[in-house]
Amino acid sequence: MSRLHVGIIMDGNGRWATSRGLPRRTGHREGARALRRVVEAAPDHGIDTLTVYAFSADNWRRPAAEVRGLMGLFRSYLRHERRAASTHGVAVSVIGRRDRLPAALRREIDRMEAETRRGTRLRVRVAVDYSARDAIVRAARQATLAPALDQPSFESLLAAVDHGPPAPPVDLLIRTGGEQRLSDFLLWESAYAELYFTDTMWPDFGPAELAAALTAFQRRERRFGGLTPAAGAA
Image 1 (cartoon, rainbow, N blue to C red):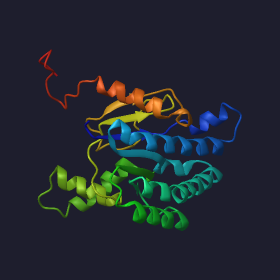
Image 2: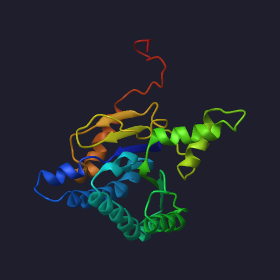
Image 3: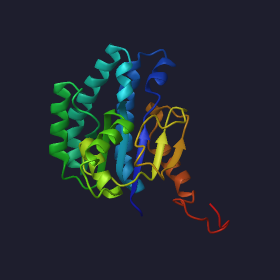
């Protein structure tokens, strides 16, 4: 079985809660449970790298109380999942800016990354305060100092500004919640990714929905800009 890099835009937590007459924070908590289910199922589907969009750079514009709640939820999630991740061979890292995150959250990120760094079963990358465009710009500033720049070296710069080693290109990008846009997520890494959009809200997403997305992916013919065997044209 080929090993895959899957990216997920975990959308719909707030709308899931609102549609049930619940506080938005309840939707975010249920979204954390959905992430746990997907992480547990991912290796059995041939996924060895999973990158999830938890908080974009633009999400700082949300109400301050919601942002504080999300920061607390991220910290709690990392703290409670650390031992399980280490035990089951899951290496967890956080990509994105860190200078704007609360100090307590940064400490929890450091603990999670240190204690799970030897995991080889699955690599989980959580994007927090993340913007692909911002990362590309920051990497480009450093690239001016590189006299022989090529794609691999630029990818190394891009990974460095996002606090992690380079990841393979994204094979499949999933967005839940019914929206059909990339929202500034993994723009460089998703150049030839297959896109899969579902109306399922993230709190309702689980192993069955992941399997359906992967089945749809496996039915597609990936050309990477080349010719199709049947038609002979792009």
